[in-house]
Image 1 (cartoon, rainbow, N blue to C red):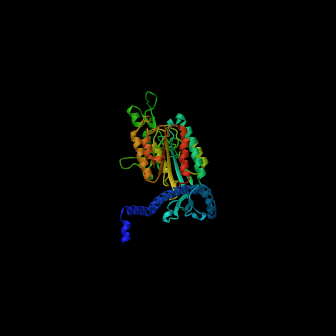
Image 2: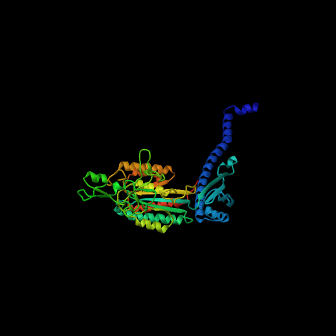
Image 3: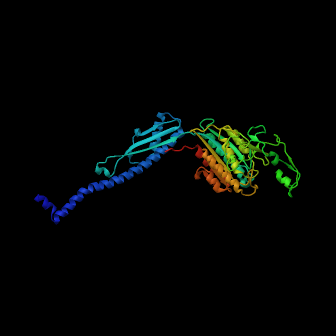
Length: 439
């Protein structure tokens, strides 16, 4: 014991003790610091490995379909070329590629990082892994284009640019479709009305107050315009003569459906089964191209885009709601498929102005607050039904309404020049057709 007392006592003893203790302690301290540094470096290498794995998955997806043998061979070639300089040991067997489901590729990479410092603690390797999953090919898609065809679209080359942008979008989707019918598109031109192309015998068309709105008055205002509707004509001492409700006078245009505080059929996709839910007939006072239901006849779709002409005032609600009708399988349009996990239903709504007129309110020349409120209701209802909505404002329009209408803030586009329409439609088309990493 005397030896230990001498060892632990005295100034010299204490000085020696500190040196001995420090020498013993420095090993785990350095090892711990080294482990932290090595762990950080391993994480950095893992991030690089993840990027290389993601790039490999996307590259393979573009080559699909491939056999598992081809996936293994090409996958390793792409991955090893993408991984760059890394301090990770990863043999070819460490890259595992599987196809867990039709249209999916899953990649897992398992390697080892060799510590540079923490080997002092006996740590020889850090396991490093990454995984990703990619979907190749496009899910089935039903897309409705609700396109403003109002008079203001004649300004600033907007209609010309819209036609060009729409055709570019069609080309993108056509090229992305793996099989005929995987992608279907509807075109819904709108102003205050929508032209359905239907006739008086169609069961979901109703005459409604046709006699009160469609006719001639024998008195005119000071600008030579006949007083309409019947109530205005009579109030100005005129005599009202209704137009006959026949296919000569009715050419397929409809206005907003009935609404009241509880039954907002004008902003819903309710089936047209009774007087309140059927669509009121109107004369096509301003030319508006007939809508085109869902189809994958790309030639017909392009021809429909060419038919669009600017005329009339703006009713965004009716355009949006008819795009919604195009994406559901029941009347009035029945070309849509039933909802399914591999089917996306999307609306692209484009307008260049404020709501100015609907069935009940507005003059057609200035903003209509109540009309805008109907648009907000229709947007909320469509999204609640599972429809995804992109919105595009071209130069003018209610930015707040359109931004809130979009399913996500990133799905709202504010275009300040009509020439930007093509880039916006290309961006949306790319999103719809591109491959998205699911992890």
